[in-house]
Amino acid sequence: MQKIFVKNENSIIQKTIPNQDEILYSSIKWGKIESIFTPAFWFSQVLMHHAKKDTFIYKIGQNLEEEVVVCLLGGFGIKEELCLASFKALMQHKIIENIEKISIDDIKDILLNKVQLNNRHIKYRYYNKKSEYIYNALIKLKRDNLDISSFSDIQLRNYLTTFQGIGLKTASWIVRNYLNSDNVAILDIHIYRAGVLAGFFDINDSIEKNYLAMEEKFLKFAKAINVKASELDVLIWSKIRVLNHMVIELVNEKRKLIS
Amino acid sequence: MAGGNFGPNTGGGRTETSLCEDLVITTNITTPEENLFNSLELEDELDVRLTDVNKSIGLFNKDGVLIGSIIDPNALKLIKCLKEGKKFIAIIKEKKEAYIEVFIFNVKKSD
Image 1 (cartoon, each protein chain N blue to C red):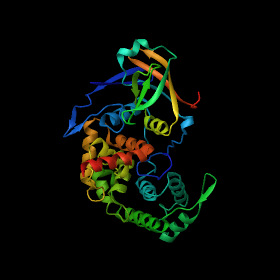
Image 2 (cartoon, chains in turn green, purple):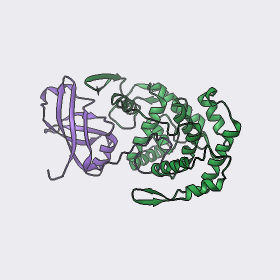
Image 3 (cartoon, each protein chain N blue to C red):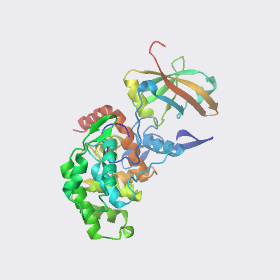
Image 4 (cartoon, chains in turn brown, yellow):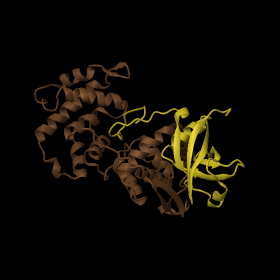
């Protein structure tokens, strides 16, 4: 067995997990606890996260409409600070309450206003598309007027993917945030690389082509190491980027070995 | 979350932006070589080095013997700094049976 000691306030907790060569499932081995990117390593990261009583707050908005807006504003190419500042600007203009009185151009005008971040004035990128997506999403939510509280997380995600500009990843992000869901995964290139290195994704897996099958693999992995999928998702995403260069090299090495 | 894109995983806006020089970690030796414990004393200095083809962080005593490894939440950041050639040392702050707590910080190469 491999031992891990974690300090939890004033007490010291000792946990054991199987030896590095023991099979987690299929051909995936636990790996060494201290060796980064192994299943054992990710297990230890979640364990330490718990010991520090550091909780992730996923929800950003006050309601589903706000969560949809902020997640549509975020994503690839948009820094967190700019996303949140743009979101704040849209909320100050009460676009949700007034959605039937305003137009796409009104949202675009708000996004075109530069926001001040770290002494720089920055304009939101992709304002054309995003203003259209946000407007159409808010109109659809208003007109559909569905009782979202009766939806399961997967039902909500399926519903959201019928919106313009919302694919499985963004829909999963909204659902994870809004419902604290552990039944969805927010798959991106960082999670893919972590999965390849830990062994729960195949090198040829494609998020674009097979999101749901990969999500199933991710959720199976989280269950196998007995951690919450939402916590594993965010911990992998936030940590693996620190060593992005090294991670890319390791994935490329694995690709060469297989081909 | 630090820099880069506002990715799909961030929640309530946390930032992690520390330089290697500012990186200090209080953690414990998580996979200790228990037979070496008795030789360790409080305030002992351990060398912090990359092991396992840069995938692990090893703590070595003055004789170059591997005492154990760490798996702190900041482990990846520490690995990045060590790969950049920054030097870190660990000081033993607490020792309770198999639990050994260390304080890790950056030192200039000439220190």
